[in-house]
Image 1: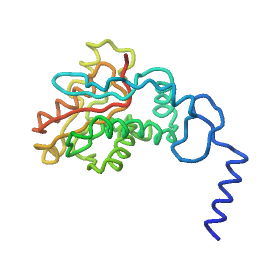
Image 2 (image 1 turned 135 degrees about the vertical axis):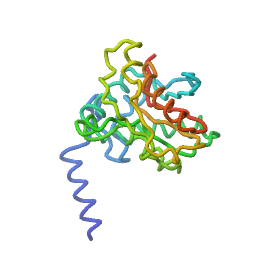
Image 3 (image 1 turned 120 degrees about the horizontal axis):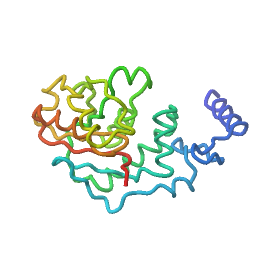
Image 4 (image 1 turned 60 degrees about the vertical axis):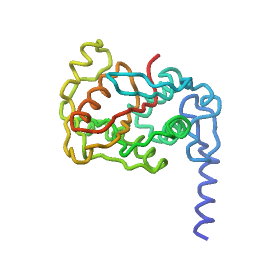
Length: 223
């Protein structure tokens, strides 16, 4: 009876307030739950093909999508407007990429690029951490949130020159538990790659703590 009433309530709610695509606003089916985008918008996401890693200071950085159009709009809504119902759709893109292109790689830990405490309190969540949690669950690899910390309250990277981006990030990260990362193969997770300064500094910090290897996966990169 409880289940029936719950389903009835959801049905009435969806009838009165049908779910809408986060990007274009058209009505979409309420199920599955990851349907926060309509099929047209999903099909307008530019996947990066072929799936080849960028080399950045000897670190492999894999990117799923081009940072443009639908994905750029989604990232802004997710990151700056707290549209967290986009999480399933965005993380699914990254999970599919891992299953299709990184299935032969062995990672011991998944680590999201951390936010500084002040930025975390301001935003209320770390978008990289939310993505990493979904990825960790779906590919059954452990998530580590207690090894790497952002200790420098850096300026936003938007609008900075390439040189200033690297200067801005220098010394931004610190290892809290080097025993967690020692001799581990680590997959760093972030939402967007531009110059690689953030991921590069985070990876450098992990490697200095004797991580065996560090690679990175981002949802999108500029092209």
